[in-house]
Length: 457
Length: 81
Image (cartoon, rainbow over all chains, first blue to last red; front, side, top):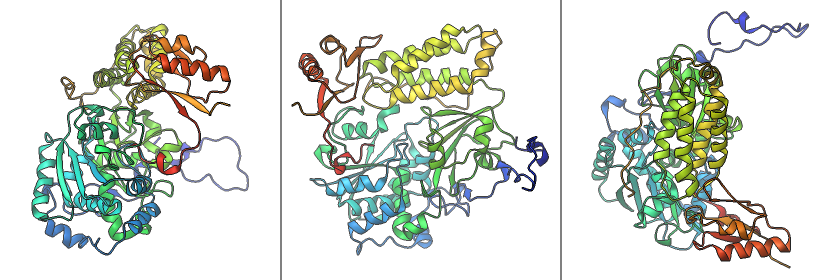
């Protein structure tokens, strides 16, 4: 549906007398709109030197953006600017940042800012890429967050095993010299759910990095009972530009419902898995995949938002805008910005079965329905990917999806349920073939799956 | 008159004893693994309130709570993740 003469798209038989020809259906692969990779002209967070040059140094950062002037700015005015910008959380939750800032700033106790760069999503690369290439932007953003909330300390929660990213941040801190707030780096444990905000707070409190249901939001009572801002590193980096250029400028990217640019990671069957791009205008996904993904036609399917995201049919995904608001309205979350592509010769059921097995192993083991239900679901789904799968196998998967959805102390079981149910919907044609004992296409190697973490941290 | 309330489960604390479902069967059902499904809708009748309180009191893991449904000031609702 992406190429070919335009008249093929005008197959309607109803005469449109007096109304002129149907509007030209734009080709998603050539639709206009600003986006780019590191160093590209149409970028914001990734503007500056290209990727090959590595971290942007302080002098270059200051040459490009000028100094961050916070001394004369009232915290309330900064928070009002954030509220006017409409910036929402880029870690996956899409929560309005201004509401978190207000809760942290107005609750009792000495506030703390936690920059969450733990990026537990196995195929996502945007957080570590941002830290690696633009560490000073992240530091600036952390200073803005501290100023807006009155925090005297900042914790950057990251993985030391992401060596280039941690090294870039440490080098940037050394270049800065003394800062108005104390900045500390904390090594996050390797677990899918370790980046969830309550898990982060529990870990900084000296407990395991496990999600929990808390009587109060962490924004009002977090680490050691202090109001704690836990915010994704991309969200924080946006603050660095927002404080300089203002809300009106910020809103010239994205949409009215979800303003600002978004970092996305391309994964799976693309030219460069792990490539991070910044989408400034709501371009169709086909444009992104054709320009930087190495695709020339719609793939089989795209997994949107993360491994606990939504499978979208390839033709639909090709024309779909990469924009949080429009996607949310369609029931799809852009989440952490992962766009994992499944090629035409790969199997959706086999790939999903592999992802489910990994995610089942990532349960924190706290809640019964998650601990028992996810392995059962993964097992049942694996049988669907085999030739000769029956309708009873399919019913069993549906039943287990319903049994785990919405259960437990965090969103892990619901995310797994979403992955499984969207796979059943998107790959129903494969299911039909499987019932006729057709051999199944293989899973994609391009979907990275780290070894399951060891014992609980 | 009872204060408006609903049942809430702390899934991480729940150890699946299942006593709650015996005490308050109109609002709590056990899944195939013996863990409770709790209906989060506000309790209505006096009888429901009584059975819900019994279920909360019977939980050995203290994983079941009665939560007031009175409107929460907006500031408290902010944040989370």
